[in-house]
Length: 72
Image 1 (cartoon, rainbow, N blue to C red):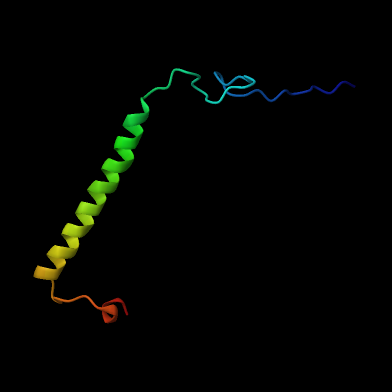
Image 2 (image 1 turned 90 degrees about the vertical axis):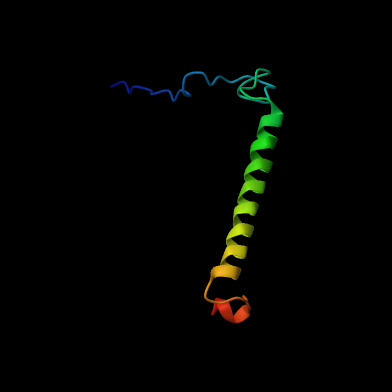
């Protein structure tokens, strides 16, 4: 009886490259500044939205002042 040996292969495109620091090699899909712009842009956008919601709730909400009692 002979047993079939199944070899586990990586997905196509992924090869063992000694010393490689990135899957894409030196050709990255986007420049580094795009990554920073996305991270900082989304952070700024969500902080502005959150601040606007708090101000809107403060002026138009049923309770004008938010204290620790608000979170019970």
